[in-house]
Structures are given as C-alpha cells and as structure tokens.
Length: 208
Image 1 (spheres, rainbow, N blue to C red):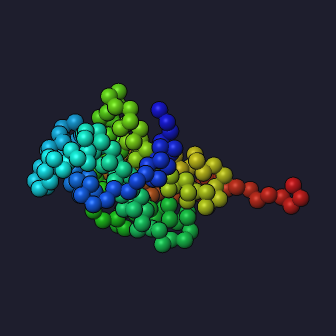
Image 2 (image 1 turned 90 degrees about the vertical axis):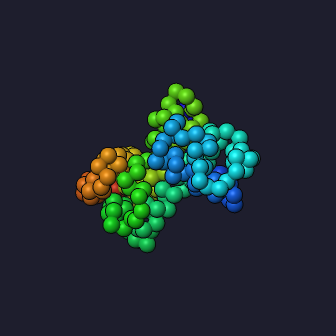
Image 3 (image 1 turned 135 degrees about the horizontal axis):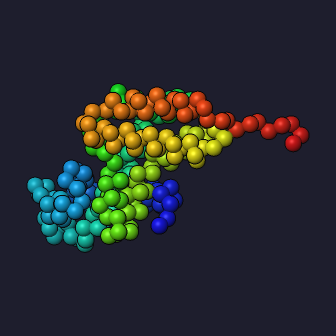
C-alpha cells in the first residue's frame, strides 16, 4: 500500500468533477456519510434525487467508482471547510493553534467523523483502492499541517504534522461519538503544548 501523503498528492492533482457528475457525487456524499458505504446501495445513494439509473450508471459504472469520487470530494472539502476559516492568519504557528478553535467552523463536519477513515475501515481486506483513497483523504489535514510546520521553521515538520493530525482525528472521533465539539478545545490546548516544545531549525553559522 502506498503512503497516505503520496496518494493525497495524486488525489489533489486529479480531474475535477463537474456538471451532472458532480450533482450525483454531492447527493451520494451525504447518504454514504450518514448510512455507511456497505449499507447504502447505488440506487439508495441517489433515492429522491430525481437522477435516473441510466444517468447514474453512465457516469459511474460501479459503486466503487462512485465511492472513489465521493472520497475525492471529501478530501477537497476537508481542506476548505477546516482550514479556510484561519487562512487569513499570517503566522503559521498561530494558524495551527486557531485551526482547532471550533467557533470558526460552521456545519456538521466536526461531528460526523472522518469519511476517509470510515471508508478505510469498511473496505479493509475487501478493496485496496478504496482503502488507499480513504487513507489519503484522512491525510489531507496532515499535508496542510506539514506545509504550515515548514513555514514556521520547525526542525522536524513531518513528525510534528503527524502529531497534529493525530490530535485532529482524535477530536473528530470523540466529537462524532458525543455529538458535540468540546474535544477540539482540548486538542487546541494539546496542539499549543506540542508546538511550544517542538525544536526549531538552527540558523546556519556564517562560513560553515
């Protein structure tokens, strides 16, 4: 299996979904998110949408094709919904800490869990491609944290990004189980402590 960050790069460079195809994916997105992948058949995913079976199968010959498109949409949404509210903050350290302040984020995403993790769990041992895409989707936060940690000048940005992503997924899991988001404020405190103790790159000595 390829690493999540590598697969995430490939997803980010993928072809954009547009038009009727995007309509199908958006509609199926909520059905898969709420009921699960195995419990939701192709027709059930589009029930009530007004989209015909013929149109559905024209764009998505199999359920796996549809799930892959849903995971692509989710991976894009994660970045925008979670990081856009703090994108205006110029200091990368502050941006990371304020990312965990749930008061800046609206909608249901924080209490629905990670769709990428759900996909990887449901298809473990059954469909390697979907598992890889699920892991890649769950790694999008890590990619963004890595970018911010590099900008902040931390000595071990990869390790730090993984620690921050672990805090993110812990908060997502607890918020999904409880239906409320107080776990994110605890994660914010933990992220602040992690950053405070993380070593910075040492400036190169003159003449070295």
